Length: 330
Image (cartoon, rainbow, N blue to C red):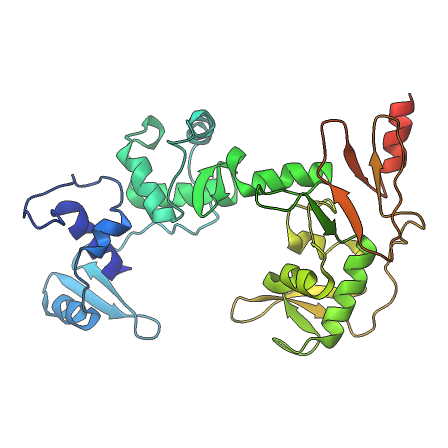
């Protein structure tokens, strides 16, 4: 981190084109990748020797080959940007929510990194961030992502939560519809609950990577597509995240999620697998309800097709279509 921050400071304060004068004011937004690319690399060994030779700096070893540098005689009071504790007043969050909701699209596209996003927010001299340190703003950004739902990710950028991929998936999950990209084919095959159960069972029983009867959570969608030519869509089945989908009671007797020591999350087969804990509908897994309330059934043992929903078509799960039809009849 120290190496990166020094390069950022140098790119910010000095003219990267070689004119030798300051080009950007201190405290401005983070330099671009192009500006950083024109700044020379720093030798980490040279930097450490330089810090150790300075009587005003205190160097302490940490984990592995890492080390920390602090100013001599000054307490190391730092903000933990990953802390789940929220020490900020309610008024700050209210004003922040209003600010992000009202941002124009071009002003609401932030870098994907927490630190770079905090730099931009600080450079805008926002009233609700007045007198806040850069460390505090980093923490506020983190809480805005993880707890407050003020920010989210979209195509690698941080954006207001209402424009984020997470929000789009939550809305799609409420409607039990796919999140359709512009590049996606108009007709694709989505896995039903029966196909999810049988597909997971087959994959886990035959898998040996990263270990027998185990597959990586990040690979499960790709494996469904390559092995069964099916799209495993969590939103079609009513969940905004794949991890939540895999913890549904219908899969509880088949598999469970497990976090490995390296941070990888895997799906592990339960040794004694039995039929799903909740009985599946003996009829079709999905029904298309149109203007005349006609039902289009698809065999649960076969892959089924689901068109992109039009303005008068809604797709219902097998557990909710009867209630919806009853409501329409009234």
